[in-house]
Length: 396
Length: 175
Image (cartoon, rainbow over all chains, first blue to last red; front, side, top):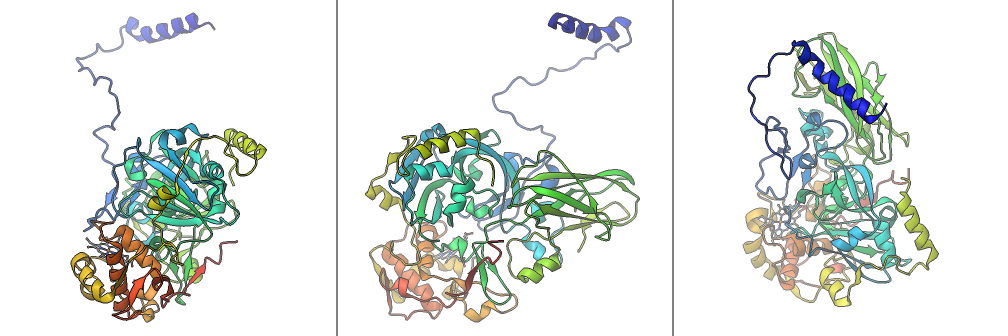
């Protein structure tokens, strides 16, 4: 069919009802808003990050409302925050990245130069290793925003760190890197050179536009699947070193104390984790009948292979539908149809990643790491649906 | 591991064609030794990067009083912010308490962190002498150095923290 014929057919179809005189005459209606340069969400939408009162709101966190975001991408404005000395206000025209240390030549890159280099775009989650920290306790948190909201997922665009390191020429003694931010405390972390070369990204883009200031504008490190704190924001410096530097945020913090008094250090990978986002704590189910159970799963070791859901507190499990696209080290959406019979029900989810790792129960996790690790809690989380349809933390 | 993109694959091919040390893209400007020195403020555990200067706990008490106490409390006991003083035994109590004295493996970290990040609202405003002094004071409060002991680039890296051997690599790392 030609373009003219198609247009004609459409025109006829649109006109048909009116010519038959069945459509009501259009009532008076106001003109809508004009075009605008930068869009805002509808004023009806109120979804927001969760912020707790703090004496030092510059050294604090805000949490993503995972139950009120759709799909696998977290809107940039809702991406969780964790800052140690506030969000700096950086002019990209003067910002530079220094690559130095055990390299042939120390190089300074401007933002313009970085953007000229070959870039990649990748969908990855970033998760604070303190996410779900409250779930080490038997009680756990009442909502998914509180229990799991220190994780978000974006499409990141930037230059593979490998390119920058190869431009500088890493010396054979170089085995680690130190990455440092341009915030007030110059937050820094040591990570292995191997990871930096494998898939590290020096990112300037997030979800199709420049990074948000609170996500590191104009430049941040993305180390896919590694604890959030290593994804250094406001990146200003990468130093190639022989070993780790034992900075404050890899010794005092972000280490896991075992029951024998020894602490695990450099626990970089985020273990596989899943959580049901709907229905979840704080929700109310209106009536018995069809409801979709949905949630998110992710793993620092690669792709999510499967997610099982239980509606009877773990007595039986059903494989949920893992929805495409499934990216490595990214949020993965799962869904399962469910007919609520109006009785009490405990909903659980459990994921398996491509390394074969299965998300543990709280008891299994404690058997492995004791009660005081504080970080890296990836236990199975439960929600209780009461007979009145109210949904709450299963262990409260 | 993810598959590199086509662009990256090309870039790597190009890289492979040169010697390891040649620049491929010719972008970025070489930083001078002075520039690097000014940017590189990290102090590693051997303390090789420590600056000139010195200070003792006696001098550090003054610095602490004026610049730290309002948040970290009298004698480092904690207040609105973390306690900076604790005993190694506290790591094994229920629940455990992690502090500079009970948990931190290196004294150099205390110098590095104080210099870059504290006082919280005015980071970077202490002189090297003041950072050495307040570091010495916090170590003294923890019973790790004497009140008159001078901390400088020679002595600070030699301080052995009580929990120096308390850290192990994640045993599952190679799994």
